[in-house]
Length: 284
Image 1 (spheres, helix red, strand yellow):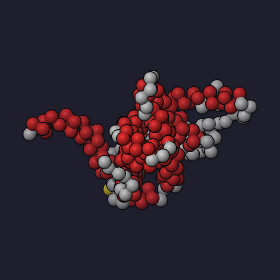
Image 2 (tube, helix red, strand yellow):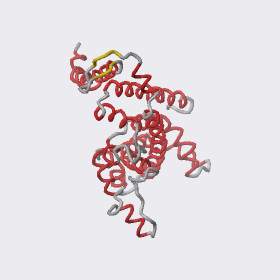
Image 3 (tube, helix red, strand yellow):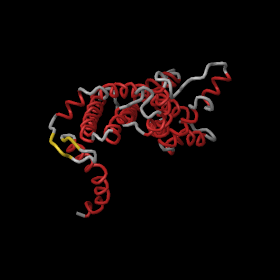
Image 4 (cartoon, one colour):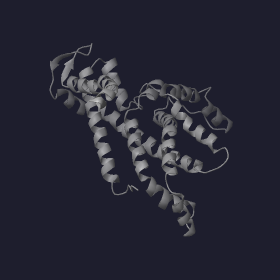
């Protein structure tokens, strides 16, 4: 009983901010709601059928998958390279580690505002650099073919700090004796990375991959500040679509059904990652 007492504050917080909203979302997904989000008529599976036949849900889902493909592998590769570079006993290396990890202290809103300034068509640093190189200016956030890439670039930068720290911690847990044995066998830096580092780091890589996939499907703040789902719906990812249905169009029941479908999709993707990776992950 004493254990429950110690856990009760955390359980209350989780109940109020996690479990209750989850149950409420599932409940509202079966109802037609009014403009205040109150259930007025039982819809059963009607909302879910509307989701699957919606002209906006499936395109936003496709964009979300594309967004995940842009951000997840890029973040893992860059964070791993930074972790490998800083996993050395050198004077001043702590400064570099702190710099690379600093992005985790920046909120999504602050990062989006900063990148919005960098992406500005006339005064932004990116177009200024292009002008200095004699290249034409680019509409980073106004060109439908570039807007999603720009949001993905912002997201990769935002995600680097946390994933860099996790991967660096994983690297520091690998015994030095294994690298010494590989060097004696004549393995170069690349072979040591592929045949020693990556296999022994596979549990951490699996964790990082799962977290990044979930985060990519939940991206909202940077999209709301940078593009508001535009231009021409090119960055209307699934969570922003749910937000618009719930708080702009006041279709809370329909949006709740979309949220439940998103939850099931993320659950299936996570299970697939575990299933596909179980033979490739090596636990010490």
